[in-house]
Length: 200
Image 1: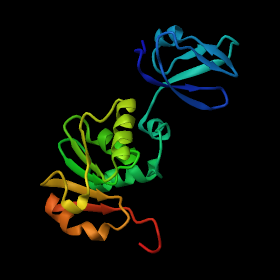
Image 2: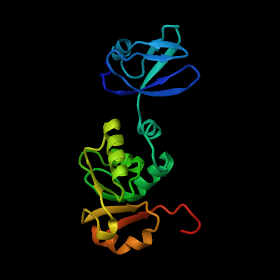
Image 3: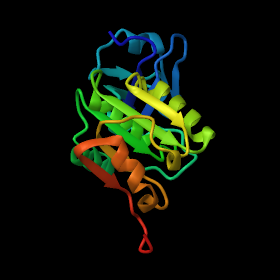
Image 4: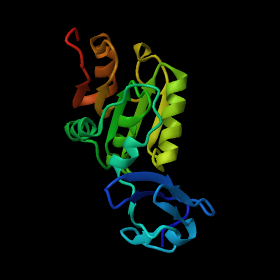
C-alpha cells in the first residue's frame, strides 16, 4: 500500500510523468480521465491502475531526479547530472559533513541531503533570507532535510561549521572566500566551486 502523503509519479502510456502528492480524497484528473486517490493508496509502487476512461497508468515512487525536476524555483538551479557529479566529487555520504554556500532554491542542498543520509550533515548558507526560506520549503516538500542546517549568513563573516569534510561554493566570486573556506574545513578536505561563466 502507498501511504497518503507520499510523492508519487503517474506515468501515462506515452511515457509522460506527473509528480503529485497522494492525499486522501484528492483524485488525479487528467486528459486520460480520473484516477481515484483511494485506488492508488491501495496499490504498491510499480503497480498499474486504470483511469475512469480505462487508460492504464503506472504508479512509481518519486526518485531524487523527479524531486529535483519538481522543485519550486526562484533562482537558476544546478541540474541533476551536475548535482550527481558534485556530490560524488565532494564525497557526500553517511557520516560526512558538507558545507554549501549559495543554496538558492535548494536543488544541490536536496541532493546533498539525499546522498548524506541520516548520519551525514549538510550546513548550507545563503545571504538572502528568501532563498533560505525557499530551500527549507523545498526540502520539507521533498521529505528531506532532517540532516540540513540552513543559515541566512554572509559567508564573508565565516561559515557556521568547522572541521567539515568538504565545502562547495556556488557564489559569484568564490575566490573572495578562500580564507573563510579553509578555516571551515579539516585538513585535506575537498573544495568545490561552480564557475559557469568565461569571466569567472
